[in-house]
Image 1: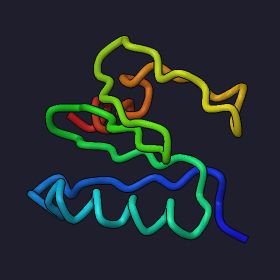
Image 2: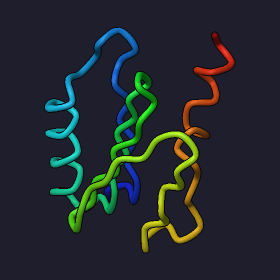
Image 3: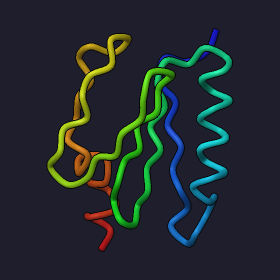
Image 4: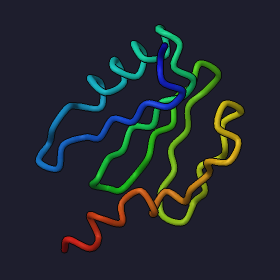
Length: 87
C-alpha cells in the first residue's frame, strides 16, 4: 500500500537536483501516493506536488490541507525548525 504523503528533502550540500526530486515525486504519484512534499532547506521552500497541481510555499505561508490529509496544514517554516535550531 503506498503512503498518503511522501516527503523528499534536497541535500543541504546540493543533494538531489530539483529535476531528480521531481522524478521521484512523479514515481510516488504513479504508484498511488496522494501528495508529495519536496523540501528545499535553502531557500527553505516546500514544493507540493499532487496529480491535480503543484505549488511552492515558504516562510509563514500555510500549506493547504490535501483532501487525503484534511488536518495537516503546517506553515512552511515549521518544516525547517530543526535547521533553524542548528545554526
